[in-house]
Length: 600
Ligand SMILES: CC(C)(O)[C@@H](O)C(=O)O
Image (cartoon, rainbow, N blue to C red; front, side, top):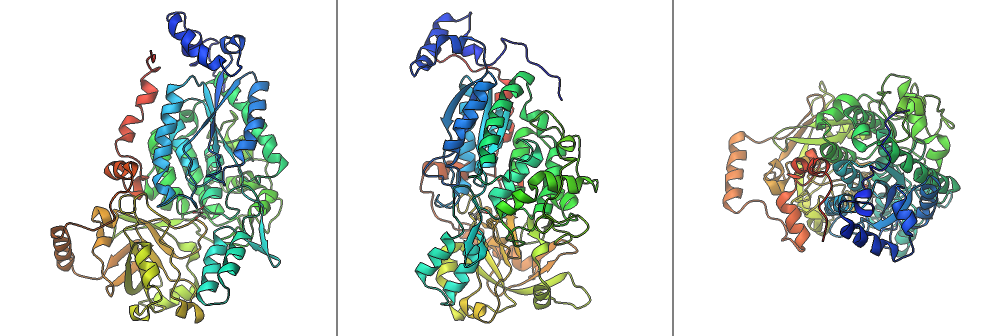
């Protein structure tokens, strides 16, 4: 347990509600918070004021259950001697927001920073869930650095169709193949997809949501064992209550995000990400969180610390099972314990309950070895990402565990070098171009083709959309070719198992190498050397670059909202978290500025 205790009467909220140096303002602050029924006694009693950053709404169905869970959080806060103040966070729904929720993470982050800094809050419960809600909340908590604990909303119950598990997202990629080949009609498509979403909660697969909620627990920012609990389970309500109780104690202990979000915590998260088969979105969000808390983390850490770690969790898309099974098998603590026995976890990393991750997880056991495999019998060896570089981009990542033997055969260019692959490129400029042309036979897509998607990055889209995973043309699916490698400057859904090369930085819109590639160029990928190159001469590449620059650069659609334009002018690349550049230099501001000035 940590020993830090904050002197009573030194709470941040006292500057609003009990400031003898400025009685005028104290009255003003008190007056309006009394108007809905809080009493003077409560607000002057020195009890911590705890924010509940509410991310649920009708617009965010993945997080909507937080509207219910917040009641139990409030009860926990009250019982531990705090006063809950619930407030809304800018909604982020991956499947609802156009052009992409990727645009909203930085906006929600900025809004939450202002709330946490500018209101009388001593600590906060971050209600996390859908993909980008989690990093947005953690980035904001790291920036303001007040005691914060994350509460996951939990995954949906397992989906079922004709006796088989249907996992969110993953079933979409399968169903769109069936639709493309005419095996199901539009209504059948909708019903099959909807079968995967049987209850409140987020994706029940190991998509980006389950990944980010699991990694939040691995980072130490949520209570041990809490990430995997399905949203409708009673245990979820119970952990909401415990989370409310715990945050009050954290305020008294002055246990802050900077105490927890250390480099060791991030390295633990990288190791866990490989073992759970986590989403390719995780490197982007962890980079963003690390930069906001000031922890050192680079894209190369993913390969160095994560690539050799085997896949233990048998969840779709890499495996068979879904969220309920993951929880019953032991969830994050069982995975961490298994990794810990191999010396892969930095056991001293502190967590929100005041104990280390080692102490929290040491005695956890795997309850079902079909779902969480023992280290000695993994689902796949070397399940982490590798980082590729070359004349196409400075960095991109690839999950090598999804490369099948068939893939290796199709693209092998030299039998003596089993890790080098070659194929011709077919290039799409955005998903509209892809949808319009994918089934056009004149494109001549063959089982040896590498499909490129560009214009999908943080500036180009804007926001970096999950559009890189593209299905092959229907005629190839009918021949049994279900996936072609996709390469792009956007993201891929965490629920896709395609062998893709993703998050390419810099993107085409920033004149990265992808802007220069043309359909018909040959591309070589060398997994051993970590390279990806278009096989044209440096002179030809330079000539293409010159011509494109002269023509005004790589073209992308105009901004449609003020935020799109603002984000485009400030955002960095996916490799470094796609944060608002400059925010890093600003991120210490809220921590070092002391309290905000009075408002009247
Ligand atoms: C399934 C979604 C919407 O694509 C996302 O949640 C992810 O897993 O990346």
